[in-house]
Length: 396
Image 1 (tube, rainbow, N blue to C red):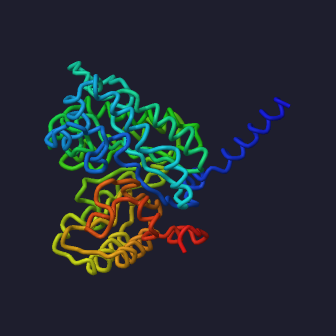
Image 2: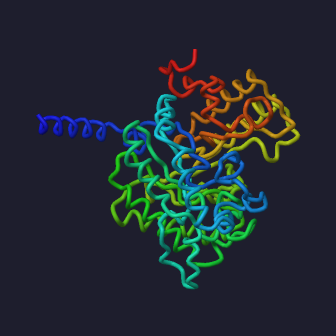
Image 3: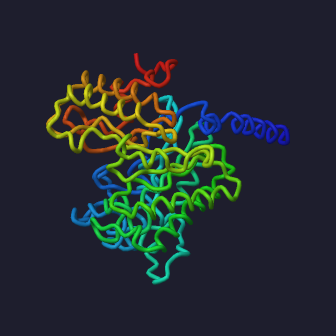
C-alpha cells in the first residue's frame, strides 16, 4: 500500500509538471497576467512601513534601502528582523490567493546579494556580507514549492544590481541616490553571475519562467548595458537554457519612436525568447492631470506607444492604479480606470504584472494612493479578474 501511495503521488506530480502554465507562457500560447511580490525579498519602507522590521530605524536610513538599513541595525538585530519579514510578508496563502484571482505569474524582485557570495570583488569589500543572509531559501520555496502547487509561473527580476543601477531605495545603493553599476566592470560581471546562477538553479523547475536582467536602469552607460544584456544572454544560452530573458531600457525610454534603438536591439530570430519591459505609471509627470484625463487620455497614450512598437514582445512589468494627489478617484472611477488600463495592456504579447500584491499604507481608498495593493483591489472587486479571465466568478 505504501508503494502504491508513493506511485500515486509521483503520478500526480508528473501530471502537474506536464501541465504547468509556465510552458504555455514560454511558448507564447498564453500571455502573462500577474503581479509583483514587491517589498518582500527586497524590502521597501514605503510598502510596509508598519512592519517591525523598521522599528527604530530613522527615515533617513530606511529610505536608502536594505544595505543602509542593515548597516544601521547590524546582524545582531537585522538578521532576525529580516527573517521574520520574509516569513510573514509573503506566505503560501498569498500565492494561493493570487491563483484564485486567475493570475498566472508572479514577478519577484531580488537583490544581487541573494547568492551569498561575490566572485567579482577585486577590492575585497565583501559588501554582500552587509545584508541579512538566507533570502535564497525563500526564493527556493516560492519557485520549487508554492508556484508548483498553485500553477503560477515565476519571473525573477534582478531589481537591485551590485553598485545600484538607479540609486533608488529598491536597488539598495551603497550611497543614497548614487549609482555605480556601469562604472566598474566587476559590478556588471557580478550581475552576469547572478543571472546565470538563477537561470541555472531553476532551469528544470517547471514553474520557472525566466529572468529579468535589470530593473529600471537610469543614468548608466547604455553601451555597457547593452553589452551586458548580450553577454548575459550568451552565458545562459550556451548551457542550452531557453528561459525567457527580459531587457529593460533606460527608464525614460519606455516608448516607441524616440527609443527606436531598443526596437532593433537583440532582434528575433537571432535572439530567442527575449521580451522587453516597460513600466507605465501615470503618476510622475502627470501631477496636473485630473482623474478623468488619466483614465482616458492617459491610457490612450499608453495604447498609442504600444501600437507603434515593432520590437521584442512587450511586458508591462510594473504599473498601478495609484495617481498623483491632484487626481481624485472614487471607487467607481478607479474601477473604470482599471478596466481601461487592463483592456489596453491585454494587447501586449508578453503580458503584464501589476505593482504590487500588498501595500500597507494608502488604503482604504480614495486618497490618490489606494491603487497600489492588487490584493485589496481584487478583494473589493475594484479590479475584477473577469478582465483577464472571463470564467472567473470571484466578483459578482
